[in-house]
Amino acid sequence: MERLRAGLRKTGGSIANVFSATKIDEQLYEELEEALLLADAGVKATQFLLDDLKRRVKEARATDPQVVRGLLIDALAELLSPLEKGLEVGRFTPTVMMVVGVNGAGKTTSIGKLTRHLADANQRVLLAAADTFRAAAREQLGVWADRAQVEIISQEGGDPAAVSFDAVNAGRARGADVVIADTAGRLPTQLHLMEELKKIKRVIAKAQEGAPHEVLLVVDGNTGQNALTQVKAFDEALGLTGLVVTKLDGTAKGGVLAAIARERPVPVYFVGVGEKLEDLETFSAREFARALLE
Image (cartoon, rainbow, N blue to C red; front, side):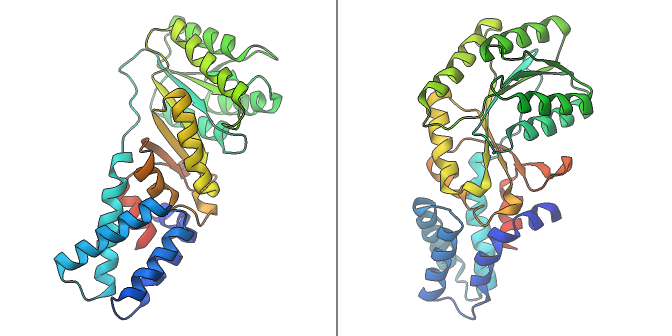
């Protein structure tokens, strides 16, 4: 909770300051609206939260701004609750995950942290370095594989779909619990690259029926409303099953989770609030709302 609170300080500070007012009036609501919009909660989620909060204030007959802050925590937790879903491993053997995202979002680092978490929980993980366009990505993934002492399937300049196919087959043959494919970073506007991702997904399904079981998008919390745009575009192309929202510790735009909840509620499996391994945390709607506003 403390790590999360510290990580969300930039976003939460400006919203929490609104409740230093002495009375509940239209000015307080206007300042709250501005703070939510500046935190990139988006117009739809902001309006929804304000309407919901006013209803709760009326029902509770609240007159103290600090009580209103508590009611906003309740409203935000309820709005975010559809995003709360744990990553499930073990129903399929292996569980195949395909990880996508734009360059710079922290995709390979997030895969490394997730791999370490799974390995620490005695899950046998196999990595697929399907980002064959960027040598640095293969090397970076290789470093994480060494740290977590897991196997990696890698080909220099190979076809990303072929690497993914080989990795799933290797995972099945070697009794892996989880296979994670790191794909090339790209922008959703690059149509030919989005087609490449669709191809990887199709080829994985040929290697194992029903796979990939998880299609995870890693988004940078710093990008605010642009993160919502990415969620919509990747979801339309690939059918996302979950999100990893990174770098929330360096941004004042953490309100984008409210926008995602209102406009494209893809589950958030993890939030990243720092560089350390333990800074990749399981998402909890109420904990997030409390860390943001208390």
